[in-house]
Length: 228
Image 1 (tube, rainbow, N blue to C red):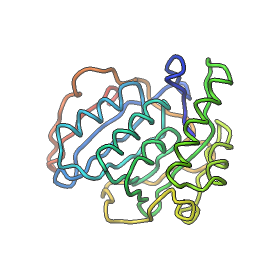
Image 2: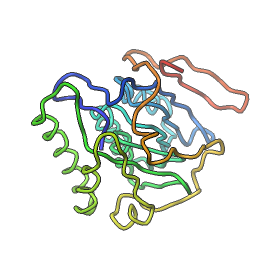
Image 3: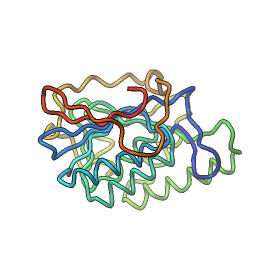
Image 4: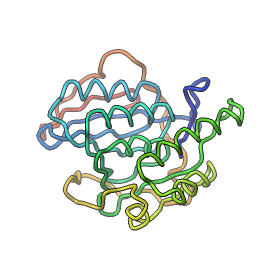
């Protein structure tokens, strides 16, 4: 399900790199988008952005995934703030952990969620299985169907299972499909042939202060993470 293992050993990236991330306020500051990879420090950056913008009630997650522990921290953060989650394009791998933190969870029309089993290049298999079991229990605690959970983690690391919106709704993974929160500049999700299975880019996000702020002509505030 997630593209790396963290918390039971060193931080592990799934592919050769985890791309940088970007956090931006949209829709008059009522919504926020996290896009890019879940590298080290991503959850902290999201926490700072939410603390600075208490009017946010919806988080858009458009990410190929990254580190499992970052996904877990984002899950707790989103759940604690009682936020709605949505994806405009795609939310794969560790991103799905964050997505599941939403009190309501929506896909934009044509958007996809993608799942596969957890893995690590350095941690032994028992640690990987323990981490995966923890996340399976989390999914089950949300009322997600057990057969769906089993299938989500059965996909090998170099493939992504992208269930249909009907499967997601039937299994109680999503609340539904809605265009209510769509970002106008959303782009099409990658295909299931492996194009989205590895993260691109190069940098991980360090801790510390929020990245630099940029005001765009459209009135969008952007907190830029490394690599952007």
